[in-house]
Image (cartoon, rainbow, N blue to C red):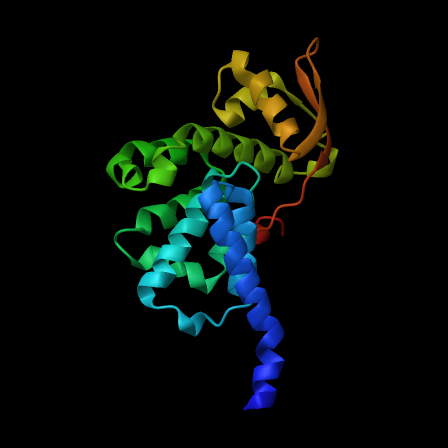
Length: 219
């Protein structure tokens, strides 16, 4: 009884602290720190305490915030976490769950088709509806990262031409430099933009969490 309570006290403390944090960041609109606090909160909270409705609401908020935050580029931890899988089982949120899969795969064409086909469902999610331009840019950033990361003999792939970046990111040649500047600004890829030769020199890739499906691509 009492000993069990004492053993659980640090866990309860972390749970309460992170719930306070996530509530504050949500109200503030700081989606990156909201996502971080939410993951910590869930790690220290007995998930049996949530009703099905609460689980769905928390999952919807965390996943929506993860998608629109430019600094959240890892979706493997969401897809591998059973807590969030409720989104795929609910008719109201299965569109959101499908969108996570598209971002995890980094497929621009698939994203554009999906947005066009599911406009009504996306408009029903205010967080996504208000941030569609960010989603559009983010999928192109992830596509570029994945093209470099999963390239055959990727360690030898140290330069990439502007024309190839345009093809991967599905952007006009004139918009390539803007995309590369953004990639550098968020620290996903470290490199140098060589304007005269229209190439991007890759120096370092920031690690990304991969789900089992993506890990299989490395084998």
